[in-house]
Image (cartoon, rainbow, N blue to C red):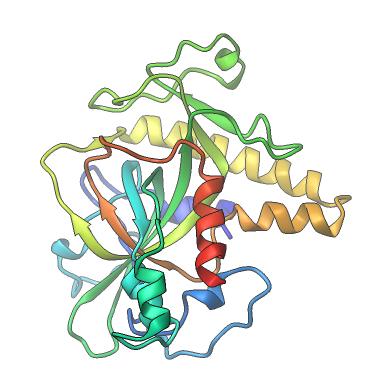
Length: 270
């Protein structure tokens, strides 16, 4: 799960410098193991790097998605099915491929890279915090968001000035959630000359809010019952990445409620 340490490591060390991601081989069966209450699978691991600790041997081309960038994403159903052990042409594979997985929006706050076990490619892993039309509906987390400019909803000012992107954000009155998100491993990246990211100062301001809200949430969870904790954990970045298709251009159709993304993940598991 995201912690203040993760947030600190996620910061780019210079303009244009970046972290990017990948913790396990794409063929490693980690998709379902990453869900809460599921047994962890054992897999070989190689060191993963952020920009703050990356050796010179990692080429700049490995850092494709940087912290402070908004992305669109969806579950890569074919990769998820393969990670679950289903073979091409099987009944289970066919059912997963027909599942109506949606496209969602989020902000990259952590980005890491590692070499695949077969040395064929760099694997990129992203920690992404959800964007939604409304603040979280989870009891105790209603204030865990920051408005994104353009923002005109009356109560948005209580969370500070809206976040501003260098290219105007394509929708108004959206909420950047600060405690809930997901961990993705890029399987396919759809590139675009158009991107929506924030400058270093704006991202640094958000980092302070991420840390404060994370710590506040931890305090609120101490007296919480098990059901509440489980509900919260399902909305937080998992310990293992989910295979994902990622778009740099966030415009276009997408889901407005990130809890639907979590629902889809568990529905696929069934």
